[in-house]
Amino acid sequence: MSIWEYANPTKFMRTSGAVLPWVVTLAVLCCVTGIAWGFLTPEDYRQGSTVKIIFLHVPAALMAINIWLMMLAASLIWLVRRHHVSALAAKAAAPIGAVMTLIALVTGAVWGQPMWGTWWEWDPRLTSFLVLFFFYLGYIALWSAFEDADSAADLTGVLCLVGSVFALLSRYAAFFWNQGLHQGASLSVQSGERMSAVYRYPLYLCMLGFFLLFLALLLIRTRTEIRRRRLAALLARENRT
Image (cartoon, rainbow, N blue to C red):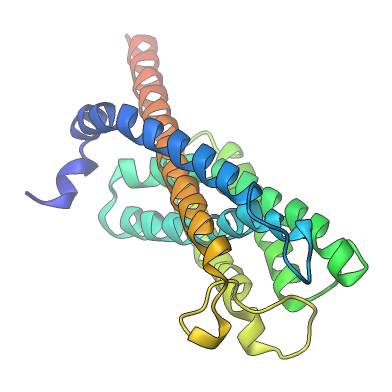
């Protein structure tokens, strides 16, 4: 079985319809359990109760970056192989990514104010993340600006390539520039820098929940886009007759 079989809208609709209830159920369970577990953890000895924002901020920030990279991959598939499902999946993912980016920006400001003494700082990572949010808005607006879906998919694919620079900067800015208020990675493989297990395990569950939530919303929105495209094709056929 080839993965390209799912580029067929009929195959995609049938398969996604079967797995969607399971993904939704797992997403709700992981998100509710992870966030509840996280907010029941003890206060941090340095950050106090504000550390619990991490259970919303970190999963949202990671998803915001990775959703854009997923859109890039889907757009490249469209540009190279012209599979309509991949273009529609990229279109469907953009509003979800924009909301995740907004959640990360807002929770980051709430977390940063008591830690840094300011709601916002033109830190390299924060600035690149804000630019990424504007790229999301521009991507959504560009899709809406064209009636021809193929032309919109082509141009938004190019936009994805450009915006990916800021998606990567949002992830790795702390390594490129030493200055800035933003802390390093919240999760590290180095034992001396690892987060305490009391926070790490609920954070893992929240990250899984946010991923599953994105997957559920992506399937729902992609299925809607396919139905919308089919309806437009039917209306155009009726108008010609």
